[in-house]
Length: 75
Image (cartoon, rainbow, N blue to C red):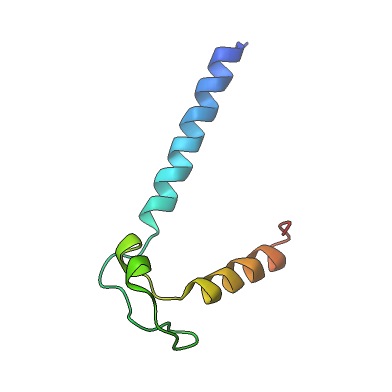
């Protein structure tokens, strides 16, 4: 039977694996200067902070909210 430290270690390993998987999903390459969805200019600070960014903050937020809504997640 697993003790509490084993369970904690298992959770830590699962979290690390999940974070690594999320990090690998970020696009690599040049950032867009204009949002692919609404054609608004993407600020330079956002382009530097997120390499490969393709959407402005507003469009990205809307997409995440729609994704959470349609997948049954709480908003």
